[in-house]
Amino acid sequence: MASNKVIGGPFDAKVLKQLEVRSNLMSKPNRDDNTLRYLTSRTGWVKMTSSVRVNGTDDLANKYVLIGGTYGRTGDKTYSNFVTGKGFRPMPGITGVDIKSINKFGLLKEATITYNCWDVGQLQELEMLFMRPGFSVLLEWGHSVYYTTDQNFVSVPQTITTFLTPGTTKEKLYKEIETLKEQSGYNYDAIYGFIKNFSWSFRADGGYDCVTSVTSIGEIIESLQIDIDNPLSQGATASETNTKSEEFVEAKKRQAKLLEKNPETLAKEGTTLEYIVIGDSQTANIANSMTKAAMIGTAEGIPTLHKTGQNLKWLTEAVGVYPVSDKVKGVVVSIGTNGAFSKKDDAATFKAAINRVFPNATKLIVVKGSWGWGNNDKITPKEVNAYYDMFQKIGFVGTATAIGDMTLYSKKYANAPHNAGIPTYAAIGKEVDNLLK
Image 1: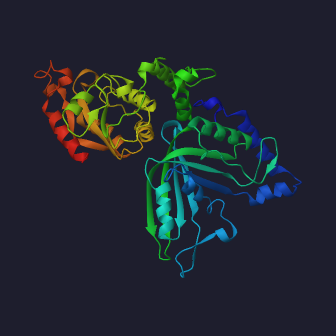
Image 2: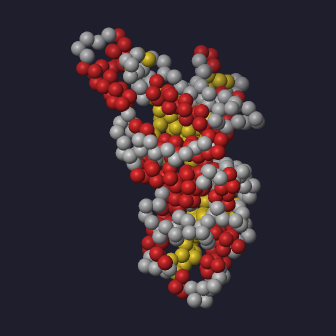
Image 3: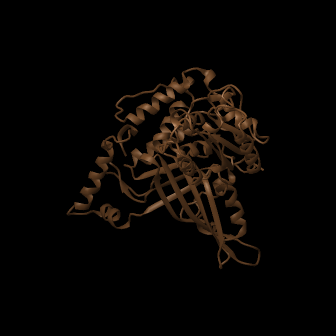
């Protein structure tokens, strides 16, 4: 872990100290009972908790806190009656987990959790908690026994206790995670993520094998978002203290400029539209060419998530400060042209922001942009298709029709706003309407 969450910065002194503690334990000539337990019986553990409230309560989420089995179920509660006269079934439990950092600098974390259950009743309840894309879960993991940085032996690891407590905010959760990391000597970690995908299969013994994929915005991006979630009440600023990474500094500067410490730059509440169009200057023309989706508003800026001349970085940051809108079922995106279809654009981080803000948006469509003008005068259709392939690989549907080569239309439509009226808009509108059905 780098100090101060700076990309490319040195390791935190406490992390180095923990590595020193482990090295000393391995090299001790005389080993007491606790050292032997640490060296011979240390293993990993994992715990997954759903934030879903079923029928307005956390009862079901508390019932199925998954570990190697189900948390809190011991003794005669280990098994449950399947069907009267047909015996008992074991409790569900996690059977495996794979956690990896992805994306540039490892900004995103992705976890694949495998678990099993033993009858259709358990499956139906687990489906409500862990098999709904866009819903959030807390995934924790660590060492079963360890020594802290102060060389205290711990045999009962601590986990988050406030996740299902009313009033717990995202900021409080992140703070508790950071506290447990430090107190454990970095023998604990956790991610607060969103369900990306799931699957289940029937087994010959009557049980079910289940898989849930969870995506979390990595800790660097999360720390940036915490700074801007409520900038006016918190007095957030773009602090650059001890920051050595240009990328980190520039991200802070962009966000400070984005918000401008002005309440009018932020949407007061999320949209109630089911299908929205967001992006650059082509947003209006695309929205006007279809019947299913619409712009959030006609004025350009953060509250409407569209603005002339902007690229994917701006749109990602604008979505990042937009209120969560759970009524949105589909998002149509017009982006790429103003960034000259750059290979450096971070489509995965953008999608993570979309998933967080529009958790029920199951239809994500990206419209291929225009070229043949300005900085794009030498762009080829092959480069354009390669750019939108990035989006399609992570779950977006790309339109077959692009806005296209402006050299074919610029003279006839030169005086129309952003070349409004060119034939491709009508074709795109019809195509997107069909995709949103």
